[in-house]
Image 1: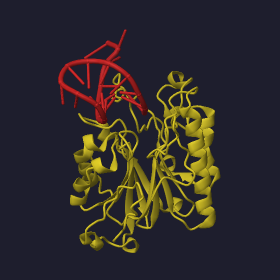
Image 2: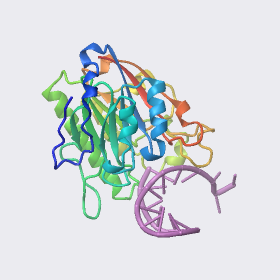
Image 3: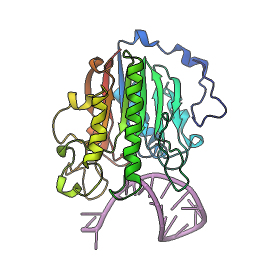
Amino acid sequence: MKYDIPSDTACGRRPTSSSFAATAPAASLGAMRLTTWNINSIRARAERAVAFLERSETDVLALQETKCKDAQFPFEVFEAAGYEVAHFGLSQWNGVAIISRVGLEDVETGFPDQPHFGEEPALEARALAATCGGVRVWSLYVPNGRALDNPHYPYKLDWLSTLRENAQGWVTADPAAKVALVGDWNVAPQDTDVWDLEVFKDSTHVSQPERDAFAAFETAGFTEVTRVHVPEDRKYTYWDYQQLRFPKNQGMRIDFAYTSPALTPLVTAVEIDRNERKGKGASDHVPVILDIAV
DNA sequence: ATGTCACGCGCAGCGTGA
């Protein structure tokens, strides 16, 4: 389980102690639980995340919006619970992590040709990959877009398009590859994925170009498995903190999991953990939990 | 209730992002 971090990489994974070598090999797992969750600050919610891991029996947790640099990430909390951690964070914005108790190998920060953003265009910490239990897991925090006339919007479309080109290449090169693209996609693919379409008609998340960019992953052979297993309307994954959106169930469904052809038939169940939005100190997104036969 | 939360900065409360 030794993993040497090249000195020039921005990835914040800590080398783990030899005790992690006792982790069960993927071949003996039988089943794996993979969860994606936009946690909206890991420092504000580390204890909540560990409690979730233990309650849900999650094996691999892909986090988005950790909102910290690598040096600020609370690695110890997760390592004490028996997990390995890879984190990619460059500032107080964005930040993605993968937390696993079934192996964490070949960590990759960002995808090839990932678009940059800003006055001085720079890479943002929005994509992180690791192989866990035989599955290539990508934790993704798709750019928000902000507004249809904002530079962040074409950046979002470019970002999705470039990711899709990569994903298509991965499964073309290896049709047996088990790839999971999970995270906060910041797209509501269907009209019913927002609580009131009228409220969003001039906003990002529901525009046709965004929906087309999202749907292109299907064309590339991927399947959005949360919809397959949870097809009902009003099963949201995000509720704004403002205006009593959660108690009124005025939310958005924007957290998804695209799986490659080899992985799709192995997904046996999906659950949106609505209860995690309750109480003081909740993230504005909830975990989306996948059961995978591996 | 024009009704939130978390960040940096820096020690109050504003600017930023979502």
